[in-house]
Image: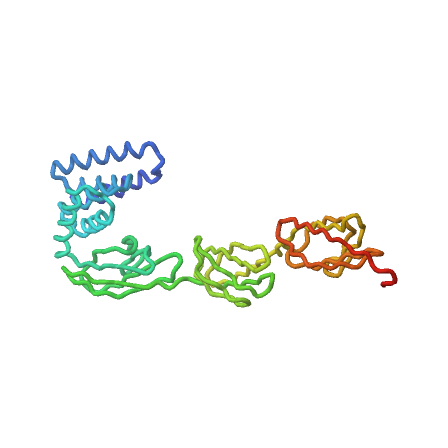
Length: 336
């Protein structure tokens, strides 16, 4: 009978507790259970067949295994179990037309007999419980579950979100809904920056999710975040931080100044050795090669005894060399 078959499943599952998908024995066990299931089904021992098909699904979950459990449970009169596995099968990407057509027909038939609840959450992926967590999870949202007719509490649990609870009334042959928006578990994040008071970009799994205004802190859902700053004239800076529920985490971002943009000046006064002033500062004697000169317009002045001072404006370009040759005029006698 079906109750004895359930006991068989429990016994064998306990015996085979150390199963691993990496074990070479998994394929052997799957074939053995599948052979036993098909033999029992052919003999009309549907409860025993169901027990073995459940073991096949436990050893090697697949759309085909789910379909076999669903059909056998339906044949054995275990309609709630059948619908649960039909729902799982129909959510798979199985493309065998005959199986999908049959599963669709069976699911439609069972909908008229069962009290169903469509459970959805935002975000999806929450574990579903009915009335008590001790009864075990019925899978993850979104999912259609089977309940007994009457009032129930649908409990939703997600590691990164606060638990949610939705009251529903389920009637036989009808589909009730339980929808919940899950509130995230949060923590506080405080960030300091150098240079000070810079806005901080907050990224999660490679996507920008928010920005912390300069000089403030923020409350964020728990998780691991990347923090970035991109101050002008500085190298970008980033760091990673884990925000924990109910805690305040601090992070410091320090951006190093970029090296100044420079070019090279080559200055000659012909055969005259003259003093070279750059922006009013004595820098060298001609001929001169000046490296790492800040880009932009620079004022050059050439001074040599017996010659008139010469003044020029030259534009220095980043990474480039600029050559300037200045001819000096002799000073008139008596001129200062």
